[in-house]
Image 1 (cartoon, rainbow, N blue to C red):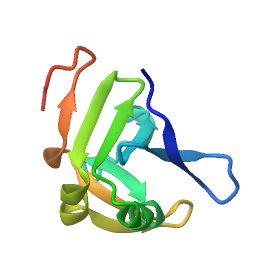
Image 2 (cartoon, helix red, strand yellow; image 1 turned 90 degrees about the vertical axis):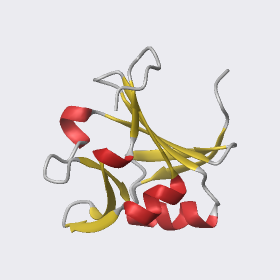
Image 3 (cartoon, helix red, strand yellow; image 1 turned 60 degrees about the vertical axis):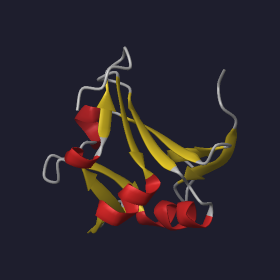
Length: 114
């Protein structure tokens, strides 16, 4: 059964969805590995403004769904905040990045692969 969205995060123009916080205080973001994965940092980023609000919302977990690779990345919000680092990009603004080594990564059969 799909979980209800508690809050949706979008860019200022409302044209891009950055993710959703569900009723269980889990932040879910859909990504494409070949587009969103930062090779330089070996990880994914989330807008710093979203992370700031997730702190206020008492987020428990971050889940990334790789739609092209059919993988699910999962980490506690506490670990994300403790281990992530911020980088500023002209086009996208400040983002918090967490490298691959801190995530639990599951394949499409829900088998832990990393």
